[in-house]
Length: 205
Image (cartoon, rainbow, N blue to C red; front, side, top):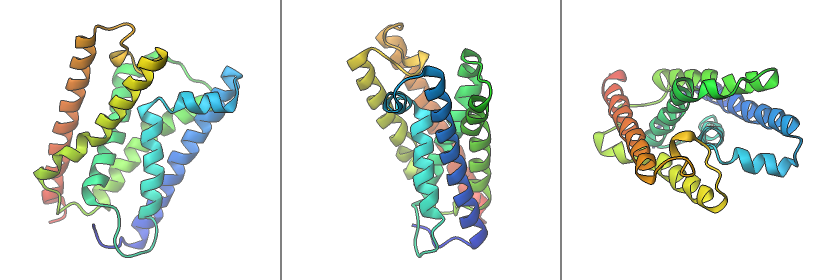
């Protein structure tokens, strides 16, 4: 656990939680209007996506961080969640952004989730998050959430044949290819963890 953060850190953490919450809500409103389907169906469909679920974790984590109390969120989890959000933005802009052309409210929600959110969360971590106690033994936590999500997404896809991302779409890809794609992403997460731990070992000194 890390000690209580200063007031500016807590205030900006709350603003980040609000940004993620508003972006998810805006995406819900946009998709529900475009698809003209029951709200529950829209919510269940959104819950397939790593982006949406990761931002829900951001809302919970950063709301907790913003509370003025002793103790807080474990440093390795904050670093791992930050990396997950950064990966959300990087993978989206490198591989997925060309697939859908959002307009109106959808455009704002899209950039809140994939552009502004990752940038401000990474900056908050660099400026405010205590990082000195990060160790290379913490590396497994950087792939914990991606692993849980991958198992969940594949299980849902096996049940209804709908896969949220083309690089794990077993209806289109050979199983070995999808497994290789996921292995590459996990390696990237581990390498990202190494970078963040290395930053943490020096940034607070």
